[in-house]
Length: 374
Image (cartoon, rainbow, N blue to C red; front, side, top):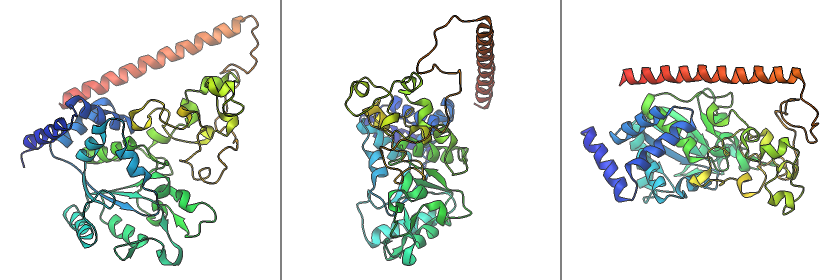
């Protein structure tokens, strides 16, 4: 197939649905940024996808509510979901397939055979282990056997959502089905985990397109999470953080502090112990579309030791406490600034400026290398 023709067809289909070329590029750029890649990587992802190089995706459902799939589809811009589905070749998905029964099972086998070693396996939902996995069966096969079968020939494996990453709500006490996450079943294999209830669709798209474009996966932490999405806590980038630093807290729902946008820590916010990029990458392209953005404390849905274990409105310890003297105290001392403080301030500004110069040089060098490659 002619790549240019395939690319024109893809763009023509999207434009017919009201999605411009600019929108298409924007989605790819956001996806690249979600996994820490520069803007030019997003451009390459767009070129690759428009050229017909769409990764084959086999999407398995186990113990879950299908919320991760729904979050992908329920975007504010009607065309974004269509863009995402046009960027990948979704060869098996029980929720979105019109077919059923033997037809859909045959489609999965064909996709495995045609893309052996290259397809992306997306796992949504927890895997029950009790009594040999009889509590979740599709097509006469239990979840454990199906997962091992499809994962054996996958090029990349992604556990989407908290249920697939570590068991999620299905593994909450008393965990009657002995549910667990995909990494616990696929021991010895690299599994990219994207916990969240639901996970952000752009984190998924970024990982899939990076694999399809560069044949690489983003840098992962010890739990298999992409560092650019999960290295920082909600607390570090929370828009209510200045109120925390200044000691301004909502005491109860609906009080003056809550209405004024004060910090929700005393209402049980789990942001200080929750690693995710929700505050930086809102859901459905709607600013503020996440729990804290609508006035509810973070519930810690990405953390195995917090989600569905710690009561929602129970306060927790701050994982990365404020360093003394770095942020203003609750009742700051407005005494005269001394020479020592001025000197320290000068050193801090100098360090920031120096870091900016180094970063600028690094970006310039990377840009020049990219231009040479082109």
